[in-house]
Amino acid sequence: MKIYTKTGDNGATGLYSGERVPKTHPKIEAVGNVDELTSHLGDIRSTLQKGPIVNEIEIIQKTLILVMSEIASTANGKWKEKQASVSFLENSIDYYQGLAGEFTKFILPGDNPISAKFDIARSVARRAERAVNRCDNIESEVRQYINRLSDYLYVVARYIDKVFEETMKTKKQTTTQELDLNLANQIINEVKEYAAYKGIQVVIAVVSKEGNPISVQVMDNSFVISYELAIKKAFTAAALKMPTHELAKLTARGADFEGLENMLDAKIVTLGGGYPIKVNGLVIGAVGVSGGSATDDIEFARYGAHFIEGE
Image (tube, rainbow, N blue to C red; front, side, top):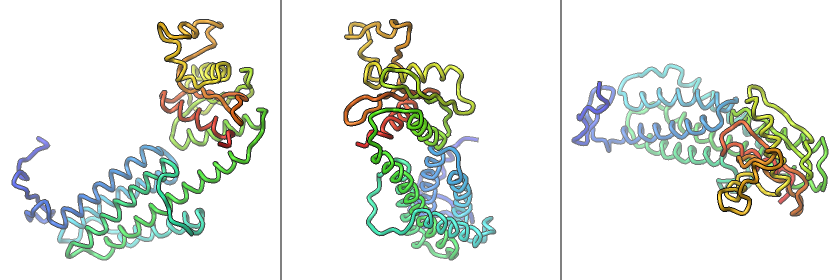
């Protein structure tokens, strides 16, 4: 069966009842907005990959499919547990609001990339709510659900903001000039939590300013080869006082450090994922991460290095 039917070429489409209406009909606009919202939630779910919030988002996405059927139908659809779905959101809102605390100031979205995605979804949810309210013969539970959903997305975004804010406070309170085992493990644990948050298994190594390993930790199901690479990335970042991905262009043919990666018994690597750790502009060590994509490893290493920079 072909995906295109040509029946909508004249600007009309069908409701579940079989009635043909213009594609600008309020119900079609409302369904389109809810469909867009579902896609944004899918983006969030694929970013986080696992965890209780991911499970909640999946439940919400499945419910929104039923909501769309209710909007596009003139009869009772397949959404049987309407009030239970509304209660699910209300309970979740209360839970995350308890964790996030009171909201006492205007929120400027963008404090971190995850909460920003929730704020985008919240804005789309509000637009979907306005579109639903322009429709006739819509059950009250549909309106309630969309209204509660935007509140849910708001409080989850603020909860995530609080988690990141507390992490940043911890960073700023650290002024040490030396790396020890305790601090190295703190850095590694931060990276592990972030990697687990994104559903990626990596190996994290922290070395001293001389490049000597202080601590190396391996997440479950990470690649065996990642162990050696993480240590080499950390060593390279400490030895050359720069992120390893920036070294790649310096070792290219004709560049200043051409062939450097083939010297020193191959201890130097140019793969992304090594980052120097600085305090007050001085390199006190480095973190190396291996196991994700190049972009992931760079992001995790930068996150770990910035944990104690206090900048």
